[in-house]
Length: 287
Image (cartoon, rainbow, N blue to C red; front, side):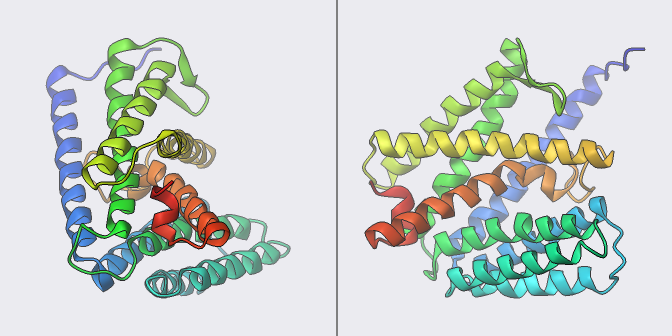
């Protein structure tokens, strides 16, 4: 039996609610990004804790009752540390995740907890590390780097939604997300590259093939992250990761693509930092 089609008025109100929620979230994020310093680090820490909480709600419950609370506290402190010591923050997160993976011998479900620490922690640490310790500015390379990633992911999400609805066509991954189409994925990728290049141009960063390819990679990875979160929800039989954000569900539903893109962005930045001796944000943007 076919599912009932939502009334036009209801669909319109849901879209308006989604847009309003997105605008509010974007405003809070951009404001904290401009403030920088401990304010941005605190926002990233709160986001990491909320993501881990939703992850645990889907994949739990766990026998070790104190572990979830201890992990949320650990994650908050570790993300805040990334403002000055990003490598140590990543290292501590990896060590804790590895220890939890070993603990799966006594409780197999703990493996999900291990993955949750990385899923919530790495992108939050990445955002703080890219932003750097500067305060009250959008002019620093760190602020531009975070805006670059945000612009690529947000443009990808928006363009994928509308181009998929307008053009339609073959489904991208019907097993995990039946509404996504190849036309949406391609339209989203093109928009992501354009948005990234526009941010770079406005910031005075040289635009070349390498930077366009970085934007394309982040766009594609963001879409893969979106599909991966959809696959996890299907695995655990839930529609949304939570109810925190009106019109969107949980915070994981809103930042799934950003999580993956930030993880890849920090990998590129750290890789070039190690190979070429440039700053982490410079390593992402300047080629």
